[in-house]
Image (cartoon, rainbow, N blue to C red):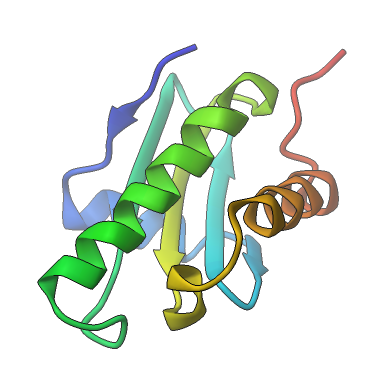
Length: 110
């Protein structure tokens, strides 16, 4: 499965208003499962730091999402970075994302 980017503000707002959300120390995951296709948006505000740090945070979120995409159902997702994402080991991010998938029931149907 591949993914497209969420581009319109209306799409982001629809995902933000969803009931499915997971807060971790390093990121927040918002999801609207079972939409047509798989679309994702990555957000890093100025709370993260300067442009270099924000770009690094988004790259880490993108790598995390790419690694987990085979396990996810189709839908729209938004990943929002929090400041600790820059210092959190990638393995911890993976574990947190897997917990989110289980708790929000976003895994593929068997």
